[in-house]
Image (cartoon, rainbow, N blue to C red; front, side, top):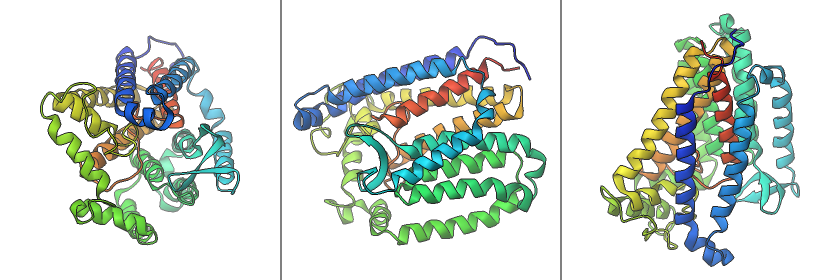
Length: 365
């Protein structure tokens, strides 16, 4: 293990700060109409984004100074705390309901989303588990099954809220980590079929999820209800063209696209900054992916490698799902675009996760 600190990955830091800055500008642009209408303050969402982003950046740099293997010592404790929070959020009167899901703890506007904390806690715990049991991961009962058991229990608790989007990101990230650790493909094939069957059951069990699937296949079949969001998103992206309509000149943000500063912020960005603006953002995410992979490959121990791989995989999955939804390539699900979408817990936790990546880069071989 290399305990001599090197210079942090400045390319990763710059890409993160630039994305965060673009996000702040776009949150203001996308939300000014809604903020003025609902709160009589066009800067309402932008000021909160600036606050959470500033807190997140501070925590990112603080965590980047803490040796990453310190978190290995507390991996079990972090997981237990997150499980307790997931239980608390399900208690009526304790958990706050927003958007039809009981996913929040807090008072009024200042609240946290325990499922977001569970994602990073599970990545830390699983990285430690895989580092300690890598040779056994090829065994189904003694390696793969125990690793997945913790993940599926957490997924089940998140689905009780329900929050399929966050649960999907967590499961996808953890499965990728287990695969990277050396699990056998034939074991995954059987679990994949079981997972597909379970996913179908989850969709059938909730009528609103069925509507999301049908609206994905044909949004114009119900343009005023289930297909409304994706239609308005495409109507934002289309007119953007190559160079966009100009910063602040979006039409869809004027009460056509609901809550444009959150899950559909990329649609407003494409409308105002065009194809080149969207391509620039994707290029920045590509840089984060590239640096994350380099950090994972150069980590001085297995725990660092699996931890870095988990974090970068989580970011990539969220980006792919969000962009897929916004462009009509995937059914609508509540996944924010990392570092760009308006958010408190999600933005802060994402920056903290990148802080872990930065620290691992300081110990790379």
